Image (cartoon, rainbow, N blue to C red; front, side, top):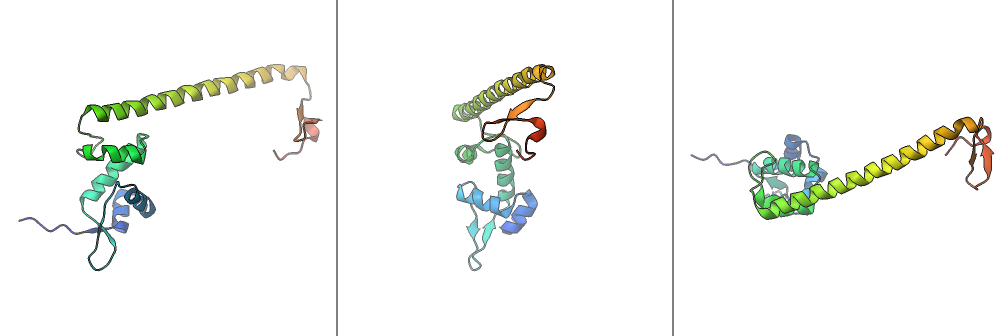
Length: 151
């Protein structure tokens, strides 16, 4: 005998998943989560499967995927982990996102190295200038001692 599933209201879904109600409403607006409206109350009512769905959404968001990509992948959700039904389109989407992240990391590494180079070059010149001078907001050179503290 199958027990009738009790609907879960948004507050309870939030409590069970640790995801705020405003985020759950956002997932709904993005087509990732679909509540049924109570017949008389008008409240959002979710099935028990909504807990698993929200957890899957969170894991994919944590993996850096957009809600648009998650909506595309949602029919491939399988199991409780980061399990997806294997298909080439799924792998292509995930690999494209990984390539984008790798490119961002490479850019950040180059930016960090450029900043380190500026710091090293500036620190190397410090002994030349016992009291260094920097331009103020108007571009006028002022001594460090007379520079305004707020910057």
